[in-house]
Amino acid sequence: MNEARKTMTLDRSLPREPWVARRGAPLALQAAQYAVLIVLALIMLVPFVWTVSTSFKEQSGLATATPQFIPDPASLDAYRTLSDRMDIPRLIFNSFFVTVVGTAGQVIFAAMAAYAFSRMVWRGRDTVFLLYLATLMIPVQVIIIPQFILIRHLGWVNTYQGLIIPSLFNAFGVFLLRQSFLTLPRDLEEAAFIDGANRFTVFWRVVLPLSKPALATLTVFNFMALWNAYLWPLFVARKAEVMTLPVALANLAGSSRYQGSVEWNVVMAGAVITILPILIAYLFAQKWFVRGVTFSGIKG
Image (cartoon, rainbow, N blue to C red; front, side, top):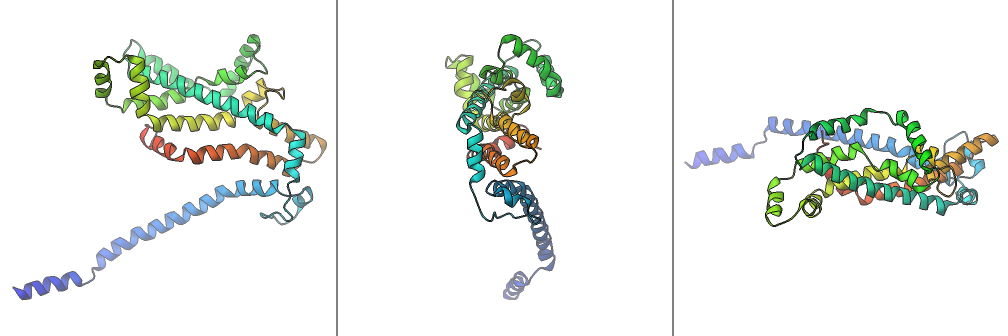
């Protein structure tokens, strides 16, 4: 009996080569994967680092033969020139106002439509949803001219409503939230109906609180799209009173090119001012963004 126990103890103490081999292969694979991801992350960061670096360079330092990521000497002349040529506070206010109001409107309308398509039963619901979803296949360039003609007839050119109202209805947002609402158990709604709640109360107090990840994901998507929007504001907002940052930045680059040489340090300073709000918004909403992508029905 004792000899058998000693034999079992010796067997346990001996290294098992197949187990080590099996364990070593995944570690090597993970190391290779992390190395590839690090290289890709660095490649993605290079343009942003170059943009920030160029914004702190002087005009004479842009024509160097060797690329310099660290400006020597570092200067704030580009930001001073940018503030002299453009009304930066007004442009930031215009972009923030259009983005915040447009994002809030998109999320509200998309949530209401998604609730009607996912939790309410009515004749032709699926057909209407498929037709609405089919609008995603229509390129923006196809509808922008008819949309502009309509806005012009309404007298909304160079106005905030002309910038915001056409962007309030988003088929992708409806699809995203509908997929999230479909995952919610109906028992919660039925319990709320038994307690005397109506449709709006169930929507506001039951469905929306349980769909925070999807709502945060849609908010980040819409915020980024509206903040970076260029084509539609280029058509509608040509006056400085309602012009947004991307349009003003494009006008700045175009005017510099027309004069003979592009002041890339000034253009990059404007790009940094445009990028920072998006970066800050994503960093604050990163947790909800990842959860929304995982649980809202758009995972792989």
